[in-house]
Image (cartoon, rainbow, N blue to C red; front, side, top):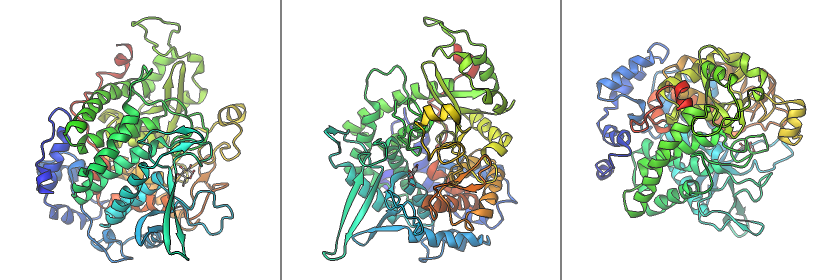
Length: 554
Ligand code: GLC
């Protein structure tokens, strides 16, 4: 670990990462422990960051916070400070532990939902890669990294399988959407089965799984200080394979990643095909995480060079063309069309008539967000929660953009949070549009499920984004809302309705990521130094574009 702290990190690509390795060792932990004696309400975040910068740190990313190992049922984070934990916390830990999945005696993940009342199991009895992320963070924050390591190794092993859909072979780097452990009580054997999209409804490969895997590998490394896992040839190869799938050259004119509908958390047809913000934000974050973990050996170096080039083009593209605020909306509204050549202002030939009515009212004077999708003559103006939060955490959003995203959430609280945090997307699509876009999907009717439903799991992402932008009070408000319902309602998967007031029509109960998401949100607020696991500071090399409105024309 010490040797790694001093390893030779290329100066061109990750100065901030290099700082981390050094700083993680320099940071004197007691300081944060003392801070923790006072309630987080009393101390402002800026106060905390001043404390950190005084120690030579100017960001949370640098903080190193290994959790203390706890007793089986005792959450370490609440046991070791003066907080009176909310009664829900103990219940949540118990429920989370009930969801553990074992392979040959070792915990390797958490099942998607432990809902015994539901007649239909579908695939909720599996360990989903994306669903395990909040569980993993909860365990890391609680000083229990083993399960995360086991999970990373198991899924890496699955990546090595040959993946086929009918007669077609998938790329080597593809990671599974989910896996399942089959216990044979007679022969006393455990076997794994995995789904790479070949069993999934719609047969879509999960593009997000590989990105989450890389992000989690970094979280594990940051949280434990154990670099040896990421340094193994297997993990190095795993990262390279995932990225090779995304960095290959083709016919694309954009640096963003072209995707099929339903390839992420929104895993059914919802009109997110093309360049969905969720995938773009995760792609960016995974690229930056990999940059800090790839070795500078022959194979690693080549990958690193491609990442650096891609990041450069990517951040420019996203910050310029996906960003929408009042000014930008007004510019698009006045666009001329059918422009040709390099001087075109309206580069993608967006027809102003295609701007939906709702967005004019939705856009506050102060605030902004990354829109859902940008491709030729098509801008999906919907707001998506995950993409915008991950944009903040990965610093895909500039500082100003991050602040604007939070301003918008505050200004549109009723619409985006309502009575249950947090809308997965806004607004819902209905009527004829719903028929065309979803293919008449009865699960995705308006204000339900992926179509404007409210997902408690998103609370952890909101909380992390709030802490990063220095606005913990927003997270606290959201958590308070969740605490009035989640336990009473048995931890539903999602809520329905414009305000998120009703338990989702087909929502599972005891949905693990609703439980884990709540715990992570609580632990982040309690000890903001945990944020370093899942946040990256702005990379000085990826200079923000000068000005949004002028960038559009340059
Ligand atoms: C649903 C969700 C997906 C999640 C899975 C397991 O299919 O759309 O995002 O991973 O359930 O909870």
